[in-house]
Length: 197
Image (cartoon, rainbow, N blue to C red; front, side, top):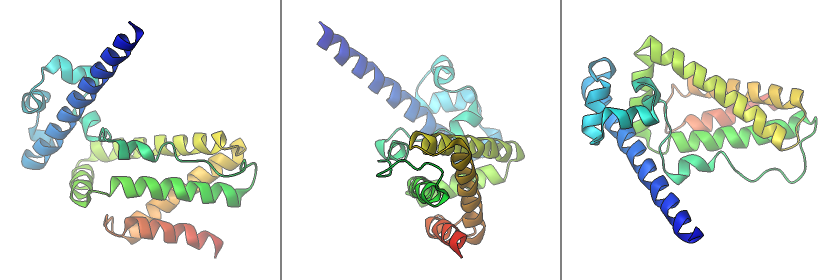
């Protein structure tokens, strides 16, 4: 009986993930075809072959769809990497090494499909409200990075400082790479490397 329930839950979870990914993919396609402003929630739901109610079950608005992560396993991998061999403590060197691994790993995930990355960035930079939302999301990543470092034994101050430096290295890499996904990770690594100069 319990096994049947687990399988049922698993099937339900898979259906939800498929529906959410269909909505996300439909939105990305429509935004690319028509532009963000010309696409409605109804348009997205129709393209994804779901009802508006299903859309709002997963997303609050069409901006949220644009900033959602793909449902594949690779997009989740950066969130749960193996931790360092020993707790970070108050060592800024260890905290920055861990932050570097997390930030560069995340960039490798989001730039794995360079064309998708470029489309996303083009939409975001051409709409002030989307750019503002992107900055809010990046602040959440800094918070998540600090939390991960604390989970790995960093002191609160060390974790927060390393997370903010990690975000700064991301911004510096974006600027020096001209936000080119093919070289972005390399430029972010260089930004981290320059910290020791």
